[in-house]
Image (cartoon, rainbow, N blue to C red; front, side, top):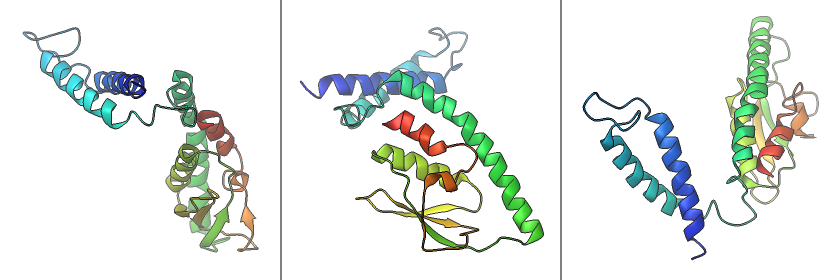
Length: 179
């Protein structure tokens, strides 16, 4: 019984996402609102399977992503992320054109994330930036090893997440979403 509610929640979320992605599949002869009946049947089957597979994610206090407010925060997170992405693209282009401040290497980043979801979202956000890639994650301390174009003066220094995203504190946004 304890896995039933999380499975139902995960299934409903999967079905709603499926409906959003398949909107407009209705035909003149077979339409249920904006979807065809085949799309709705396939969506129900897939959402039941997804609900059963993902029920552990929606269970317990450790993982709070079942809250719709956190989904809204993820959508809002896209705006500061895109701003940082544009700035990073211009910075990398400038470094390549001028040839200055290019000291590639791997640095250790200590973001202070408390959840695996936060570490995952931060490492994905870092890897999307040009010239950087998350190479490894310490599963115990959640420290990231990041390849950068410019490692700075002291390559052995443990960096904070504010040094990777200097203009907007994306790690703070990620903490609001996942913790």
